[in-house]
Length: 586
Image 1 (cartoon, rainbow, N blue to C red):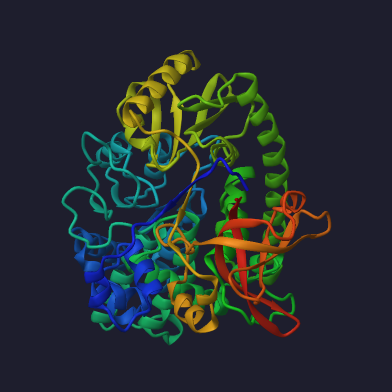
Image 2: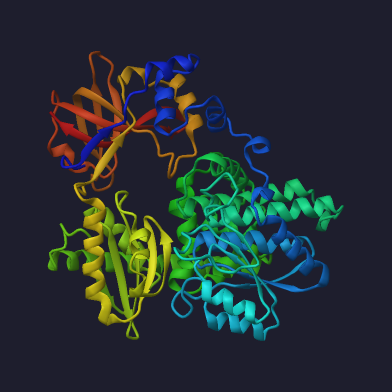
């Protein structure tokens, strides 16, 4: 709750747009327009995703046929395929998707997931030479590879074909000379959906392989149907997409929506065990009664998968997700849970140190924040950067100095394209990559740190010019509380799943009268706020972590309220719940 936060209300829809869809409630039309969904086809896809219609042909990727033919050559000749993944939830999920698919088609695979500390992100020359020594001639990357020009050039000289599946920002100068590149965003790519996560891209390759196998008259192990096997992969696609925070729109929205259903039925024994540890599934093995949400993935499932690569090695998470032996599953799940607990504790400790460093160095109002910790693990710095960015609303780099090398992660605000700025100053790095709002890098030397700080801050100031960095809350539409009812909620429920690009709608109600404000929770950290507006009807709202407002509000006060609408289920009853986002006392 921060009265310094600026509220921005989306532009009202035009009368012409409203008249074009008379069958939809005005509020629904406003929410659709806010998300750029303005045609009948786009509205149908968004409100009623259909797997058979809204999932694209994987062969629309320009290199897909080439990639599929090369993989089937490996399968047909008994050649081992090396799956080179990444150490985060997206990369691990993508690696699981391709590993189980190639194996069910009769192929042989091995897995290499880099160690965050010793290998770094993506391919490196030592790894490529190691593959050559093992007699590997085909490598498939998952959620990495598009920045590895030199490494793939080396592989070519050693007789290694590389198929890239990735979605990260492409290099400015030229692409790696891969055998085939499956990447939705590279220049000239014909694939229509540009926002797939690494797991989504891997899924498209798996989908293409299954289609080719079926065309050839092949039979899967255990006589599984090809389409059924394909859909059972969607649990991993949902995890990867939510974990990597890609927009939940278009094809990705359809894949995630179906993937959330698959998640509740998943056949992956290790994943079920992970979800039991996360208290998302009953320990007795039963399915849960309520649907899974992206929030379940983002706050419970993905952090546990990520914890393996942050605290130890991503192999633990990968093995858990493909393991079938119950004893090994119990052991791996326990190790992963311990990693997650250690990750939480260490992150909390270092965030406190990082906040102190920001204040001690007077960076609160700087155009970009830089934090350096001696001995800080590269597996944790990204989490710290994210939290510091949220507190100060500034592009933030958190770096660790280890063995005379500085490696860091950056998290940015929406106004600053972080990766674009890094690409304008590549001479500072031995390696870097990422997205507009998240990146990782290694400096060429600790000696260049101060020069890098100066250059990046100047670049931010140039990119922003007259734009002021400030925390804002974007509001979808102003409403009358009386219009929020069950009939409307049933329609709004079709907007799920919520996530990046399709955030949970936020509403503004003005001039509400406080009926009562009570602290709730063990320590009174939450607030139950009851309000009225031009009627005797009292509406209940809940403000999580808003307990301090109970001291400021009294009956009769007038407020403006920003809120989200959800459902509270308790003791067999269901009621609409208005969740407070922010409020301003008038």
